[in-house]
Image (cartoon, rainbow, N blue to C red; front, side, top):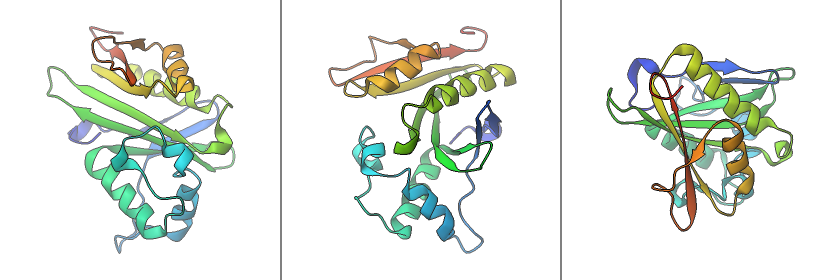
Length: 186
């Protein structure tokens, strides 16, 4: 996680998913064309619609724009790829942005799944796997995820994984969900 030093999440696996740290750039600093092609299926306007403006791309981004998007995410967070364990296909991305010091570690999570994956339980499986891995490695952290009111499916995913709506952090446009892991939370 960005700014988290040694506690970057290496990855985890679930029944159907392999979620691993994203290492996108070649030795020349450029993204391989095959990876950019895979990401094009995830970084669509519909997949990005619930993210903040600075995380949007146009309807047909070229390899350079996709590479810039990835570099921007890597500069502010840890980026993990979500792949199908059986075939290796790229299904989506998991974004973990760490904030705070040792006393109060906060990790804001976000995830993107390709449109072809919607409604198949991959989001729930990924978030459950993330929570289980953080519990397994024994981190003490407050996980946070913001969800627009126009995205009830993501809210259901978080609730099923044990998150609760945090009324104090929610706004008129979006709800904030939190889950404490570690000595104080689980």
